[in-house]
Length: 386
Image (cartoon, rainbow, N blue to C red; front, side, top):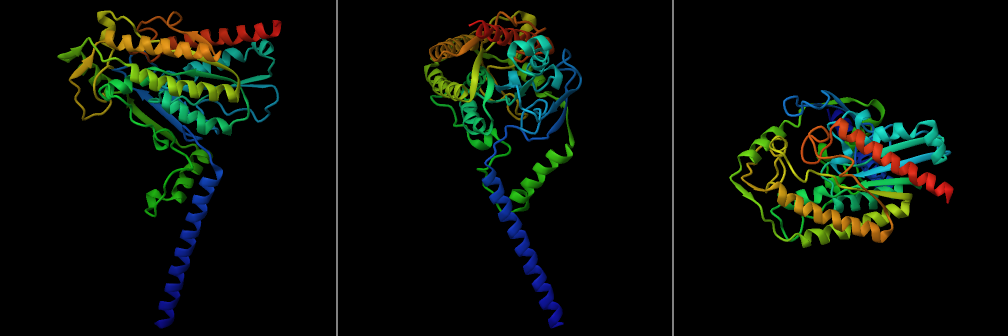
């Protein structure tokens, strides 16, 4: 009996030793690798937009993440003469509800892959990867560039579209003097700064198992009736009694935006041969029909199921702040010598191009892709002639 007890105890000690050793090695590996990912590499998600809310969208949207944590194809193994483009920003570039092939970064890649366009770029292949993510504003993108860009070889082009999220967050928080600080955990699902624990769900070992599962097995996940909350958000806005036409002076917001916008653009210019800033398009005026699709501008987070919003700013007030932010961004880009592209005229405000105040339909995404592609090629030809 004593011998059996000793054996069991020895086995238990050995198992504890193995578990602790594996966990410590896992923690060391995650920190040693120093890799930051906006999306989980290998993620395969099938999004089914709610048909009642988004009748103009395709019923199924593939959301696939490549080995570098980008939405897009895996980059080619042979990097010779590769023209690599990175798209960054918020939800307008992420295109969550659009199919993988319908997003404007994907359409842009197909356009640039034509032989005559490859010749103009002096490349044998074009790769466009998108690390834009919903809810990312200027501070979040500043953090993303700081952590992610050093992981890349030198890029040929970075395309940035950011702005509306800053205004959205400021209004949602009640137009405060300062926005809540963005943390690493808010942006990156996988990162080396994570604090691990000894509870099974908080271990680094489980984290590595999850990462390996996505990378090697690509399990297909589903988001059914995606965006259903938008219907409730639209109703709340349409029934709001307290709709304010005046909004406080946004100078503090604009200063916050300018600080981070300047930094992120300088980082982009350091890591790429060229940078293009896409100026934010949005609905400036709305017909009665258009207004039924709007849900933004409330004090509170409309996407939370248990949050009832009663106070909204009018679309005119929202647009006034957006216009001032757009002007500030244009001035900074001009000062830094960054190419900027105005999109309002290319993607006119209509429910054909947008399904709300600023998110794109397939048609709107195609128009942005056409416009950005034309700018890239025009600059490439200009440099050749020069």
